[in-house]
Length: 323
Image (cartoon, one colour):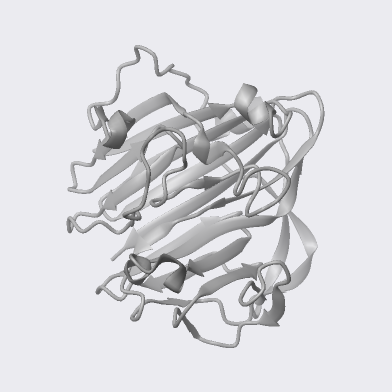
């Protein structure tokens, strides 16, 4: 999993005094062994665990259906490595896919949990990078006490190198439990030269926007992209409960490891993370008049650049749960 080296200094993280920790970059072989991702079963011809099935999804795109013996279910499209559905044991889908989402293998899937890599937001390459526009492969699947676990892989190719000329490996492990969905993203530099990146999980939650709110961000430094996304307003979040009264596009730096989302539909979703240092809240309001009322985005992100030397890896975990 994640390797940390504790430093002697401390800092204030959203109003809480916290011991400073820095991510220890370790060789690929060590990281993969410790996170149990070393077993590689290639997608072509591999046998899936009994709780994982491949079916044809929208647009005939390959889709994995994960089913827990405890009654929960998740769906993952291999295009973009995108989780598009998470139903806890109650049967309610807690994620949201926009009605204008396109499933043609050309445009990214608008909804669920899209990847932003190796760039978050606008920049030298296309918006949010290329990982959500490429086909991922399955390298492992298993059952753990009735819960499905699947690992996807993305590697560089001509398409990615046309925008970002580096060799890399991304491993994405998805674990479905009765009332939770966990993901671990591991980025490894397989090149002979260093590279840097930013990344995020652009999670769309089903919500009633007028009743949705997020707790846990008070005291965080904020970068508010409203009204001018090219010149964010720096500030400090003073609210105990952050709501979505209109257009919202705000980055919270050094956000806490635990947030609570009230989706306005009767559910409280706990959003935990390890090593996703920042949080982004987004709702497009009237820019997407057909559907803005039905979702909010609470995104775990790494806004600052991560620098990796050859053979070094970076890892982050997201854990979504509902009571």
